Amino acid sequence: MEHTLKRLATMQRLQVAGLELFYQNGYHSTSVDDILKKLDLSKGAFYYHFKSKEEFFISIIQNLIVQKVYSALVQPIEGKEDPFSIIESSLDASLETAEHNFFDNGFALSNFLSETKGKDPEVNTYLNDILKIWEVALITSLQKGKSDGYVARHVDSDGVAAYVISAYIGIRLQMASGNAKNLRYKFIQQLRTYFRSLAPQPIH
View 1: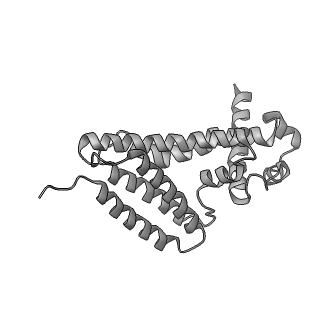
View 2: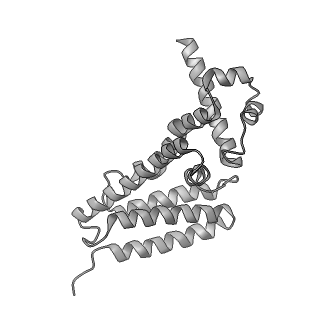
View 3: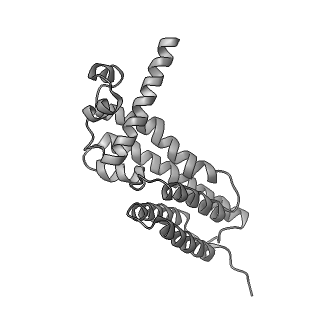
């Protein structure tokens, strides 16, 4: 039991450090040696837990990235009423976290998706699955909003979800380049205006 707990603790420590390095430097630019140096760990200790850098990164996706995306962008909107308000709040909270992150390099999920596309198909598939989970959560929330009277019946939920995801990824990239507070404010204001146009309009 104690051996298992130690092994899990070591894996967790490796994954957290690995995600930080991959996020700051990029997946391809980060070597196993970089990870070992950061953790003051031997190669034998690393390869005891993981067969390769790819397997290590996939473990990070499954244990850390999926949890970060789920807790910030999926869980807050699941089963809630008034989808526009809830989606806006979840995005704003996530953007606020990024705004105060001194080492912000953009949205980690989209960064890794762009970097691994066409080069690391297995890794890219795992990352795309996370994006799909978020997309489905948005569509489900919007469809429920139609039934509850918050979203106009004619609204294309799939299209709105695609727009929200694309817009969020774009603003995260811009915020990483500077002026994060102002960009976040403008983004949320415009998103609110867009959502208002999709709500049922009063009949005159």
